[in-house]
Amino acid sequence: MAAEQRNPFKIVQGQIRQAVEALGLEPSVYEIMKQPLRFLEVAVPVKMDDGSVRVFQGYRSQHNDAVGPCKGGVRFHPDVYADEVKALSVWMTIKCAVLGLPYGGGKGGVACNPKELSKGELERLSRSYIRAISQIVGPEKDIPAPDVYTNAQIMAWMTDEYSQISQKNQFGIVTGKPIIIGGSLGRNEATARGCVITIREAAKKLGIEIRGARTVVQGFGNAGSIAAKLMHDMGAKVIAVNDTKGGAYNPNGMDPDALMKHKAETSSVVNFPGSTPISNRDLLALECEVLIPAALENQLTSENAADVKAKIVGEAANGPTTPEADETLFKNGVFVIPDVLANAGGVTVSYFEWVQNLMNFYWTEEEVNSKLERMMISAFNAVYEMHKRKNVKMRDAAYLVAVERVANAMRVRGWLG
Image 1 (cartoon, rainbow, N blue to C red):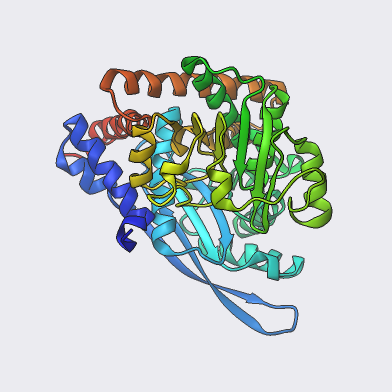
Image 2 (tube, rainbow, N blue to C red; image 1 turned 90 degrees about the vertical axis):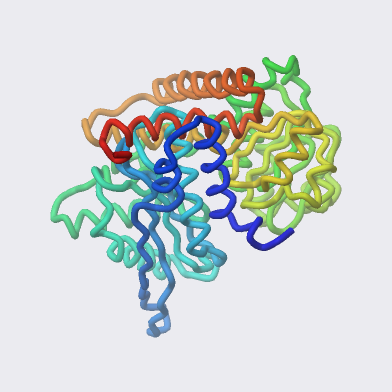
């Protein structure tokens, strides 16, 4: 496959163009939405424990704020690069619009390996990054959140640094914070919970029984491990999982709680008692009812999509399926719940957290989960109805729903002339 086809920014631009053309919208809609309204590239200097100073490359992309402030995570990963961050910010615009949230898309990242940094170095990196982007973010401008290899503690450091710059507490500057400083109950599980809700709704439409459904999870991080647990709690059978070090397979099913404990103790799911090792390629090709890609982009490609035997693919990760793979899966009758819908639970509860911060009134976990359930079901049904009405893939249907909403906002604001 050509490098350009694998480039996530080129992929998402093609998706936007297709939606604009399918909806018969003005060409200016595509011209505005094909790139971020604002993209910032920053140097992130960090004093290391040995006294030296390293300068990391950081980014923040603000794609579109027609319906509200930008919203999106910050990832710390060695492979972060400009086009990836831009693409992820576009996907956030689509994701927020699919759910009907009053947000546009944003995304950020720092090219680094957090596993090689001490806690002190990680804190100084987090603070340096938020300082570097502080002029363009804020509770009413752009609200970051956790993403790959970032977490509540990192959000707490960023909140504190921004609050010091502002000379007042600014808990609404980021979401995904610890509960004690304005975090929302239910946020940690939200991405996985939203994904599992959409899988459950898809199973109903397809006549698949969740109880006993063989489930495979690629990527046993936060989203993957919680999705495995939630599927298990509904009676599904988790038969295979993997992480960056390898995989574990047991056709009789595995207990996700025990898997999490094993990973916490050994840093991997590899050698989980009762399991056999499995390669990533073989894991994706297993006979199963549900496959949950919860790792990084471009995991299902033209090389392996034909091997996928799952009935439902619920994309907990961002951009795990290339356009060629998507076409193959569609032709083979695999029901794909696209990332912009399947993993939108995280940004939905981030929205709830932000609302709670702004009004300084906080909800119970039951209230949060109940509101998330309603919004995920409503979004799933809107996309499913578009999918049936237009006879298009679920991914295409999600883009049609989202682009139309953003275009309407740009039109009434006068952006389209």
